[in-house]
Length: 475
Image 1 (cartoon, rainbow, N blue to C red):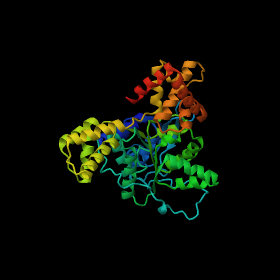
Image 2: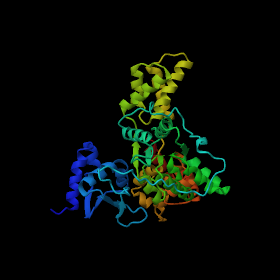
Image 3: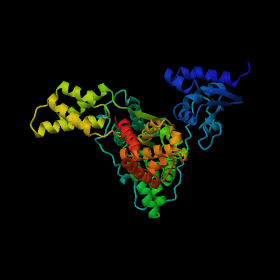
C-alpha cells in the first residue's frame, strides 16, 4: 500500500492522541493538515507562526517519536506556516520552516538532544557601568494578586496575568495588553504580574514604566545624543511593563523607537505587558505596524465590577484595614458606587476617616452623606472618542464627517465643540486632541476653544448647544 502524507499523519495522530490530554490534542493537533510526503520528509500545515513555535517548544519529542515509528530513523518534519502580512494589504502567505530536529533520530526511536538556537542579537552599544542587577523594577509591592479581587468583569485579564507571571515570555499572551476605563485596576494588575515574576524569578530584570515617562526619557536621550544607549538599556529588560501606552498617540519618534525595542524583546522571548484606556482597534495615531504587534498576543478588557464583585472588593479592603462595618452599609456603598474600584475604595476610606476623626459610629446616615458628596464631586471622565460620538449624534452626522476637512459651517461648529469638550473633560494635551479629531494641530484646538467661548457669550442658539451637550456628556 502506498503511503501518503495523510496516512502517515493519521497514524502519527493515533499515537499522539494516546499520549496527551484530550484538550491539548484538540487545541494543538486537530488544526494541523498534512500537505506532502517526500521520502522520509513530512510537510504539515499549521495556522500561524506562533502555533509552529508552540509545537516546537512543547511537543517536539512527542512528534519525533511518532514520526520515527512511521518513517524510520531519518524522519524529518517541515512546517508550512501561514504568515500574516503586517506591512501591506497583501493576502496572507505561507513560509516553510524545518523542525528544530537538525540530526536524524537514532535507531531505537529515542530523540537526539533538542537543537536550540542560542544566538543573541548583538547590540554594539554598551552603557558603561550599567549592570542588569542594578536596574530597579519601579514596582509597588502593594499591587499584588492577593488583593486584586476576581469577578466576571476581570476574570480573563486576571487569569492571563497569572499565566504570564508563571511563565513570562513562554505563553501565547505576549504581549499582554490590559485595557479598560479609569480606576478599574489596570496598573494594579500589570504591576502584580511584575511583583509575582520577581518573587518566582529573582534573576529576571523587570521594569515598570509609564508611557509618558518612557517618552520623556527618549526625548532626553535625543537631546543628549544618547539614543542608542537608551535603546540598549531597554533591550536588556526581561519583562517590560508599559502603563498607559495610548500616551504614545501622535508621537512618531517615540513610537519608532518603541517598535524596535518591542521587536528585540519579543524575538528574544522576553515578556511585554501593556495597559491602555482603549482596545488596539480604537487607538488613534498609533502606527499600524505597532498596532499589529499589540494584537499579536492577548488584549484583555477590565470592565466595571458587578455588584457581587463590588461587595468582595469592599470586604477585602475592610479586612486589610482591620475594620468591621455593618453589612447594610457595605451593601449601600456597593449599590450606589458602580463606576470603578477607585471610587469604591475612596468612599470606604472617607467613611473610616470620618468615623475615626469625629469618633462617630458607622451609620447608614453618615454613609449616605459621604456617598452623596462623593458622587456629586466626582467628575465623570469621558474619552475623546465618546465625545466625538455624542457630538456627532447630536448634530445628526457621523464621526467621519465631523473629522473631515470640509469648511461647512455646521460641521466646523460641531468639530469645534468636540475639541472644546475634549479640552474640558479629558486630560489630553491640545496636540493629542487635535490629532484624534481630524488630525489637526494644537493651534487649531486652541482656536476652537476660544471660538466656542466667544459664541457661548454672544450667540443664544450656540449657548443652547453647549448646555445640552454638557448634559449629555455628564449624565
